[in-house]
Image (cartoon, rainbow, N blue to C red; front, side):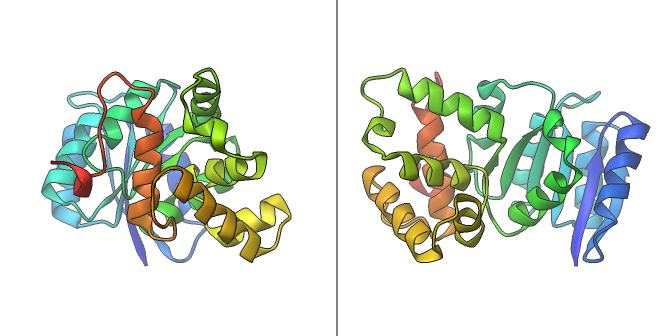
Length: 228
């Protein structure tokens, strides 16, 4: 059972998300909060597996609440839902450790299955960036002559984009219409070109996403186990 807390200052939004999540028998929404401070308190009291936070809330923003939750309860997965496609918000959310965190745009929730998918991914340790922001990152990299993206084939870039979206190899193979072993081998090639040994582990996937964002933010960061 995946225990979930929802935090949003809109009762309508809280109710809508709860209804979507509770369509899954293995999800249990154990608490709701109206602001960031209450979200932090609820996490301490109820020990959820995942906290879903609106980026703009009274008293404490979703990003601030996420950092406090990560300090108090580092095992709790974090999903920040935002109306803002600003990569600096992504950088700020992921800066200490991107593992088990997601930044999801509200527009993506037009597909109700997306919230369910991202909760599953984060609860399994994945790092997830909204697909719109992944595409924005790729465009930024393609505009730079020194970017590692230029060394990737079209298939390798597509595989990386799915990895950044929190998809598993089996799902990537299905979406791209290629055999699973080919998707797995392509992911390994991407990891080599990005200087990472293996992308099969959630920690290393998080590192791959962190490195990709590093090159397009003013203040670089690395996954926690790479900091010195």
